[in-house]
Image (cartoon, rainbow, N blue to C red; front, side, top):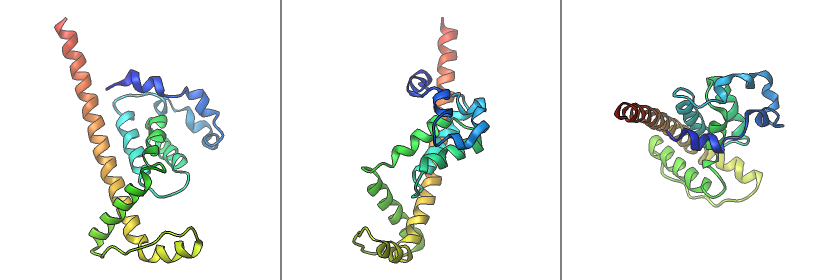
Length: 169
């Protein structure tokens, strides 16, 4: 596991504890596991971050931070992974979530033209909302599980590799 590489890009815990949006968590941010990368906190952080990346909601980073605190996993990694859904990738990922939801529910995909209005949002929630939200939850759970499994196994293999290289010396 490239622990040193990840640590190099992680901000210092004191700067995050003083962040204006994270101050609402107060003393909960003083748990040491939130700031350390270890075999338990890293895979859990990937699972939390990947799950929250699929959730179509505002303030995903704050929700990821809350989940990281609740599950006691690495907070900076959880929050950083939310940025998988950014303005460039969001249309592709959310369209994919909608298509997965329509397949699960057995609905035909509905054609829609986007309008930036409250009326369009209300009418679309009735037609494309249920398959879209179901697809987001399913893909969020799937990517969280796969991310947890991959990072957990990468961590184990890197430890085994280090042990083998030590015993070879």
